[in-house]
Length: 180
Ligand code: S3P
Image (cartoon, rainbow, N blue to C red):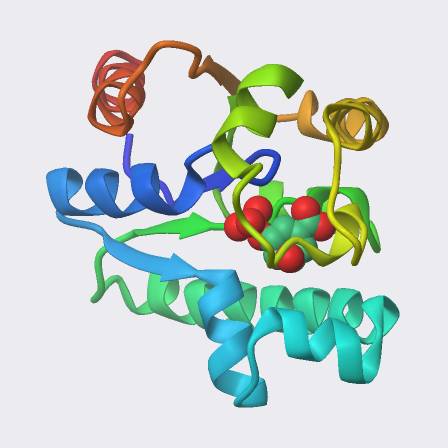
């Protein structure tokens, strides 16, 4: 099965790292939507949130997503390029009906992890604007994860990443693709 792969999941789920490994292993292109947004705006995501607000950021996510979909459709029609692995921002599936767009682009895979694990992975980071400008707690991670889980669970496949290295998570996805 030859299809684009879209990775979704909460912050700290490993979307970028797993995506990068997967793209190398499969020989696919790799697209990181957060990185594309930063390049497009010439600003870090933290700065975009601070200077322009969350709504602006969410609309930008959808705009970039639409343009990826158009590009990918063109590439598929030409049959010339290879498929892509696309890593999304943690909030993307929960806004503007993006989940439908994501499923339109490729097979959507949810990299799932528990709130506690996520908190441990990201607690030393300072650039997490949606969890509160003054820092965050296990409870704020857990509340936000609960709020988003219903969107994430619409994925085509769920990989439980607890105890998996990024390489092992990428291998699970490869197995799914080889045997489907
Ligand atoms: C966000 C997650 C971030 C980034 C932005 C908003 C969120 O991406 O898009 O800070 O709302 O969860 P990562 O999940 O790659 O950290």
